[in-house]
Length: 344
Image (cartoon, rainbow, N blue to C red; front, side, top):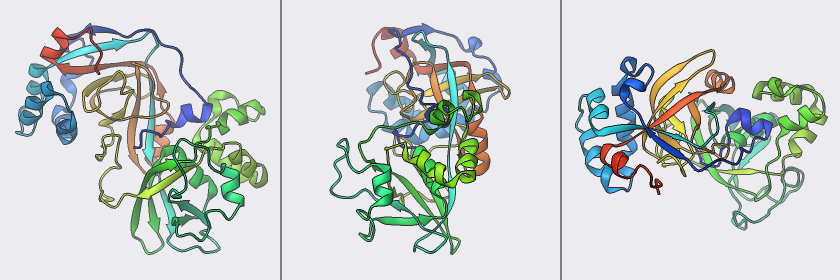
């Protein structure tokens, strides 16, 4: 879901990761994977088959062809893939993300007055542009035909920019999907971290709902809080993806709730199957597919689980901050002969 999107909890807290050691690779067996035999391998194979053809590596070509022929899913993975544990000295951390579904209008009204903008043509991504406050307070973008839609809540717009994509339910009942289009070249500042620094909350108390409620309860100070974050995300309409499908991930394909994860592509190949063993209050042992990335997703043992679209998915995603383990499934020959070489 846009590789620029940060996961909820860590983006709010301003987590930037730690310096990690050179990754190590350990070959495992399927008997080492907790709950492997209980998973729905066919569901994972279906998701894998959607993006495996986009992996530009010769050792994956034949595997992808076989995946399209509806093989026995568990046998397919166990025969042609080798579980490999990649570690860099940092403990596993799972977080969650989702696609917001918001109320909006294609024309401004007294209720719908907070615009979602296309990226202005004069902006060169990576170079500084107007800050969030300057965009909100000036007329620099207004009336230029850059508006995709208008929302009824500035906090919804802010969190839409944190997520990087979303669905807008318009006043006539139709839906439009928006995806990441670019940003203003300004540094991201965590508003959650700012609230902690003010003594309003403890770090473990900060969540999307907590920030949302605080801004709404303190309109003037809340607007000032949002303006602390100079970073501003622009969008594009994603009309090529039916709204019934999942949003586009980093592979430019729709991602699947509870089967797609965001990973660090420097360490985990996009498109690869990945076995996760998530601990916490709601343990999850499941075969996922690495189909997305995120600015807060750095390290060998780091993953963001996609929970779906809408408020319920958002609540589930916002509660995830768990330990555990993830294991990458690599083509057997590659794993055995090139285990000590980088993925790239």
